[in-house]
Each structure stands twice: as C-alpha cells, then as structure tokens.
Image (tube, rainbow, N blue to C red; front, side, top):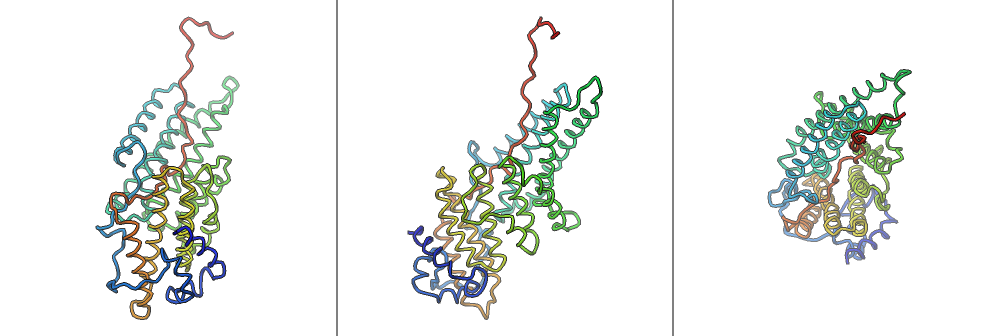
Length: 394
C-alpha cells in the first residue's frame, strides 16, 4: 500500500514547486486536495492529535528511542569489530618490520593505514553522518583524531621508505618498478582520504572547520575521476559531505546524483548514503516537504537496491530516520505562536514515525557504510624463496 502511495505522490509532485510556494508550508500544502493526502499519509498527511504543543525532544536524544548502527557481519558488536581491526593493524606493522626490502615494507604499512581509514573510522563516520546524537559522539571525535594520527604516521613512514627506494636508483640499481609506482599512487589516494576524514570527523583547533573542509574537498577532486568505481564513488561521497559543511548546499548538490537514480553496482552503500545526503540538503535549502517526498521514493527503491533482508530493512529504516530528523528540524524552525498549526502537524508526523518505525528498540538498526573508504592497499604476498641448493640464475 505504501508503495502505491509513493508512486502516486511522485506523479503529483511533478506539478508542484520543489523549494518554495505551497511546499514550503505544511498547512498550505495539506489544503491542496483530500486525495493527495490519502496516499501520502505515511509521511505528509495531516492528522489531528492531542499532542502537547510544546517542543518534542530531539528523537535521537530521547532515551525511549534506541537507534543504533546495524551489527557488522561476523561480529557481536562494534567493540569486537574494532578489536579485530587493531589486531590486524598490529600484525601488518609487524610484517613491515620483518620485511627485508623497502617496497615490501611500504606495502605492509600502506595496508595497515588503509585498514585504519576504512574500518577503524567507519563507526564514527556512520554515526556522524546519520546524526546519532548519543553520549559516545563526544568521544568519537577524540577516537577519530587518534586513529587518524596513527594512520598519518604509517603513511609518513611508508612514504619515507618509498622515497628512499626511488632515490636509490643508479646505473647499478634499476629505476622504481611498476609496483613502486602503484604504491605511490595508492599512498596519494590514502593521504587524500585521510585529510577528508579528518576534516569531517575532527574539529580544527582554530575552530575554522569550513576552511579545512574546503581544502580537503579539493584534495579529493583528482580521485573522483579514478578508474576504480569504488574509489570514485567514495571520493564523490566524502567530497559532497565536506561541501555540505558550507552554508550554501548548492556545491554539494552539484556533486551528488539525483535521489531516485539507481545505485552504482560497484559501490551501493556510498551511492545510498549519497542519496540520503541529497535529500537532507534539499530540506536544508528550504524544501523540507520535497525532501520528505523524495525520501519516501528512495525508501521504496531501497527495497530492490539491497538483496539481503537485514540490509534492506536497515536501509529503509535509515530513510525513515532522516525523515524524522527533517521533520524535527522543520518543527523547530517554525514560530510557536504564528505557526502553531504547522508545528502541531510536524509533531504529529514525528509521533507517527516513532510509533510505526522505531517502537522496537532492539530492532531499530540503521544501515552503515561498513567501510569509510574502500580497501585499496593489499599486503604483499609471501616472498618466493628458492629451495635450498637451487643454483643462482645465470
């Protein structure tokens, strides 16, 4: 039934202005037609309730509403996942220390840095993007800063070994191999991602986060065009997230695909999160009603975008969660005296969403990125040591 409502809503929205006029005011829009609200009741219907006209609590901070990231496959919780990441990073560092040549050392160090950026930084990245305002969010920035410092140190060490290898080229020693050149490109890519994640997750000491975000977004410009579709999709997503930190959402919107375009097959999660970001930016630019309608369509398509049932359910619930946040922000912007009817409408939609989609605390999970960036640095394979007694090559 909701799918029918969503399709009907998409048709009717074609004749409406997305960012102004009647869509900008819920009280005006609800007077359009009775039929329109019949099929849009899941998100945009006006219902009369006896709700307290006072401001509702932020739904993410309300202790009665437990919303959390979906559990990663193979792990009981995030603590177990992060312990595994820490162990694997330590193992890669040990292998780097035992490697006998600079190129292999570089490979292990880059793999360790990539693991930190991709997996250790995934929980805080997903939580911040989804605006999960929980107590640990304050710690997330500190944890992210320490993880980024460690990744930067590994990247610096890898760069030192790689430069030493390249400077050692003489008539007797051949120039850098193709492997060394590939490692150099991987290192540049990881450094750009590290700068982007720092700008997104960590507040600058001078408080000028927008300047750091713009600089980091520019650093991603080259890898947005990367031949690897996962790298390109991740770079575009983080570039849009950084551009969205500016007061004007237009530059971020220019980067993002349309909300109802199919996801890229090679990077469905970055594509899905990019569509959630677009809807949120549409709301921020003055079209909360249009954003809510788009989210309903994204939620309907998510049912086909994700094949695994847990992912599908978490993705659809993530759409509902962003709708809840947009409604809350819309409600809070309305004047309590002159726009009381509109605030009551928003409050009724918030209550409906909470009851229908987030009543089961244990099952209120949201889709997560799984990896903050792709894994692009693989550890070197084992050295091919000749059997004992094998004569040297001629």
